[in-house]
Image (tube, rainbow, N blue to C red):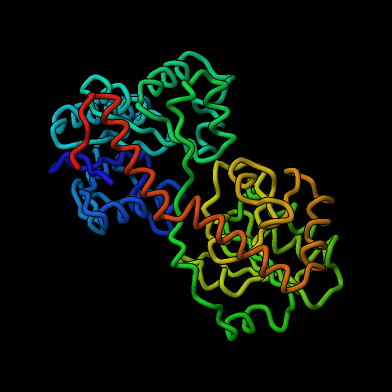
Length: 397
């Protein structure tokens, strides 16, 4: 595959703290994709705002990624405007450095990048993560003039990357050119999740349980933990051979402990806390769980499936693209406690061999469509196509 003209680099623009311990979805994707591209011989730069709680170095090398953080005053409204102006100035000043601009999160920095890139003839890909854009962002049809201006600016991008088919459909519904919508999910490093489980870790956390269900995510209302606990109690109350393993921390931790006691499933529920590396938990589990009320595309979903787990998931953006009932897991409507309980009971009754079959089919689905290798390949191809669209110049072979 062709690379952009040397010695130019790929610029990742991210409207978030970077790097961040534990990493949010967009942040971890920038790191993973950046490292993958560097491994293919590309130079990758990252531009982010210098946030109050993040690193305070203006320039830093992070795992071979050259990071620039834009300083700006902490003044309401004015500070953000100054940051965006400084981003535009940086893009103009470095215009000869970049072959492609890839903006992650379709917000203000992506809008500025799209306009400046189009003006300078630099191809731009804007990635929509989902939640931020659907709730108060460019995919939200209820907002006013400012949102319309931002959406109009992002339409100037060479491609808009949708991480799910639902986001892709929303983009077309909101007036984006179908031919410029790139359907490409997040990428997951499948090799990280290939190791077998640790029997001792499983025993220490879950005893002799025959079925271990795993939920990875922040303990927050939008993730649907209360729904999960109630459905779990409905399906399994009184059983000693099942465990629900919750990996993550958050504001609902105490409330969820209390709810588990009220539902008489506190001996079944294991609160493991936050983990930077979730692969050992995926390796020991039998079933992945995703009960969010809304998502863009969950990295936890991709990681569970890459680890060979069948998944019980809510029918939300992204999850519905990968969880196929009867093939890779079970789906239920968001908020449907009874339907979720039925799915949990079906999973428990399926038996180990059937769970393994579903899990391996899911892993294969991830390998083909969402492995870091597959996603990097497709991105490199589209970086080249975007360059032809904007400049008419074929990338160097």
